[in-house]
Length: 578
Image (cartoon, rainbow, N blue to C red):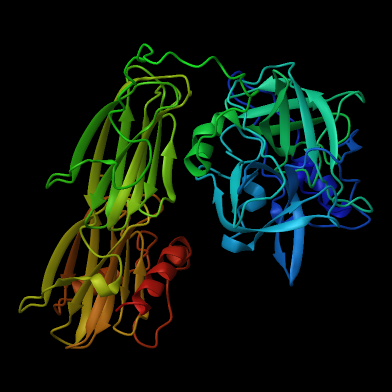
């Protein structure tokens, strides 16, 4: 059951944790944003301190064969810690916080009514929703994942996902295994009515003993709704606020219908099960022909048949189409010849758009529903390597249709992001040189190389424009950082002074502080003038420049701390240069 999302803390931690997990007031259009709950690292924690873990007020069941245990290979065996639902012969639906650390063939799905009797199936691939952000309980969490098995599950009929809209008062059937003392891995079942529905979450208050509730070990398990005599998977167990899952707990599931398109993109669309129709009379030899089927202007799936969007010399391109009917999606493809930042926009006057981008292997790269609360169009930006990318245009609601436009902008990286791709800067007779560039996105690094033409001190300035806050690092040819600076002389610009040797190559790494992006200029001066040296070594509070000379380990603590992560990355990239 979820225990703080299915995860329980030991007694000596529970008081502290619970004090920070008070239920917040539900906002009109989203569920309470809970503080971070325990993650999967505690899911398998067991011991006498833990509360009983099962569907609270539930009963053991041998039904629901499609509901099984979710876990991973461990020490030659299997460790189960969550629950999942078979939604196709080779696909299991579960929670993102259950599967975010499970990789490739390491996942396991146990089919049976108890852990001891379960038959384990191995995973071949794990798909965690690309929008999963770890904020369990928040409407933006997207706590949903899919595990593909390496073979179909035999003798078990999958459960179809719910594609309607859950309603307050609708009865949920909760099924899960739970983890706890003396009761591990027993499948249980219970029911509860829905109390609240948001864009991506179903929630309920466990406020009387006539209802059931989820608890630790039930994470990833289903909440079924019954429509027309058929049960559908409408929720995926995500979490709760109570430390013991008892009365007063506020529990929540991820809405399956909200992610039906994403599920279909991985599993494929399967028809809703229903009774087999009685055979009709033999048709006339020459029946009236059916009307022409609707022509789809673009294919629905990624692949060679997807419509190409040609990019011009500026890296821009566009496409357009129509979602002709319910459930339609149109797929385009682009070719990125040089790595850089790709921005894709999907707009429509007719429907609420939903945009997804996949790489050439079919792996999700980025997706977006709404640009903003008051803007139902979609847009994504991502860092792209050279290759083919697929753009899927769809509607957020399965029943929507209409016209749309797609636009693509590829901003190529103007300078290499490691030493092996550094741009060479030439020095004149006075040992002066310069270069310019742009930090196109947060995390971008631009490398330059310079060969010193005299031995002595070299001053390097990095000046940002338009509010850009640059950071400057310098490395020698062995990959050792010899200088680093963020802000210098009361400005956001950067300056370092280093001792260089004639004929030796040095690398300049320009990047942005934090999320800063924008244009910059690099100015190199290897002359013998003293003003730069004096300025660089001032001890007043406005000067934060770092001077690191051979054998000198002095550096600004503030600048080192603020830039440590980026420097580690730069060094790693440098040492891996070709």
